[in-house]
Image (tube, rainbow, N blue to C red):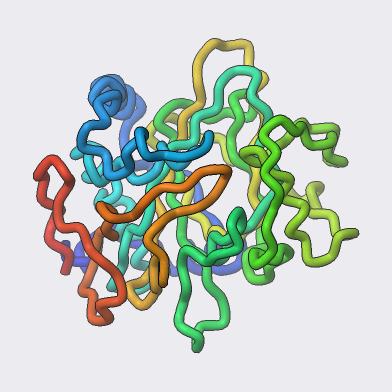
Length: 313
């Protein structure tokens, strides 16, 4: 697709994004459209016969099973290529962009919140970088576009950010966290919020063990179904627990984007994190805008079911 014709951030929005590390809301679908799309697709996704990660070979109890369903689902493939998303991402990353990962983030009634965290290389569970920017780049990370497939209110566990924290890492991702899925993290100092991190205590990665996030500066990002928030993964972020008086799940779908100069899963043929591992033999990044003049990464040009990705220009 031609980047110059896509919906782009205004100069004011770019300045705000650079200062705060996020922008929201971005309307991708009307709520009724989102509801209809998801009602149909969630049934199709139960068929994992074409998924790039085989559950039979998946070791450990891990969220990896939720990764990269855009590589077998046409609806999710069209979503990660959505003009409303790609134009805005390209406004920050430049004309040549890859989608390197997508994942679901469900939160059910009674679920705890997610701990405050940042991600630069996404080595935060194994110590092995999953994305590596060129050495001449001062900073890394990914732009995440988190789309509410259902309503995301404070009571249902919406995201929280601490604005302006995306330019300095407070965590050392070269460390390894201890996987303990039975642990319940201590109540945080920001009002006693019950939080966890997929069986880990993210605070084990803190560069300064006495450091505390400035939670008094946090903002909550409530979204209607079909709306997105775009943010740097290096921004301090978390989520509220799901405490709403409803039986409805809160479901977010995150698509992660990097420029084509970034190396994805360098020197590895498997994802190892969160108590599990999976082989990458069927994985490919998707070129969502521009050209790939680097050739660092294996690219997928269609879903495993034969839906061809839109041409990137």
